[in-house]
Image (cartoon, rainbow, N blue to C red; front, side, top):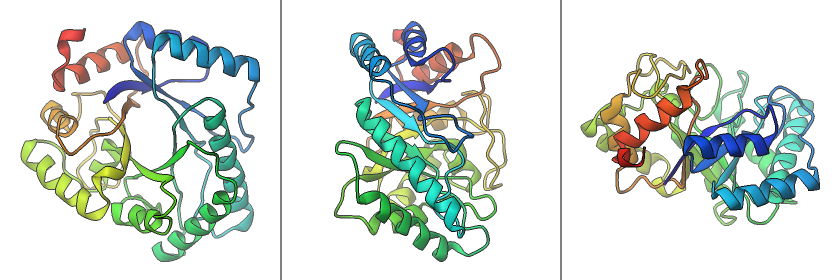
Length: 284
């Protein structure tokens, strides 16, 4: 399990790798393009080659791409769904170009059409993408807090989608702790983590979780709200994070923090806190 952060694109990915190394990160997540644009991020061979060389030099792996927020694979509107397919295809191709093994995406909202209809539309969208899937890249469907008509608040919804493509072995899950809390999955202490992981394994399968977004939150359990907070400053608690991230059956390859960027040293503080709760404070 390697620890890191979601990093902004400003200044270029090379700059962010240097920043990640300075802070002691072991992995990194970045957007595949502008998070609020339908235009996919461009692949420039020169900058890509420099990035891969720098990444190898600093050993910051894996690189995880996160798709733009606009993607809605469950949209009942054909144009939105087609643009989402195009944008997700571009993200997968970019991941292949950068030797990134994972792309994380939100699957979207059924916009009042119902969960089953939404799942069917997501499956249709993924079938289209499967026609030209880049080798070596896995798509991780992220759980949500379950607000409104958003899909993924219940892990069973993600499992239904993944099961439709069980023979492909290119779909997995990104487990976001703040989203899970908002959706009613209690991970605040050792006992609750044990109970919740049993439920997660039953509803989804722990082996499908390849990336974890480690975010604290101040919202009430099961509120369906999505609010990220610094590690140790929310309701999940140090005990909860420690119990979850050191549990024998919880084995994501990368743990990415998406905590607030409201201070010059907040990333460093969050990384130190997370290392401490997982028993790696001697590395500070």
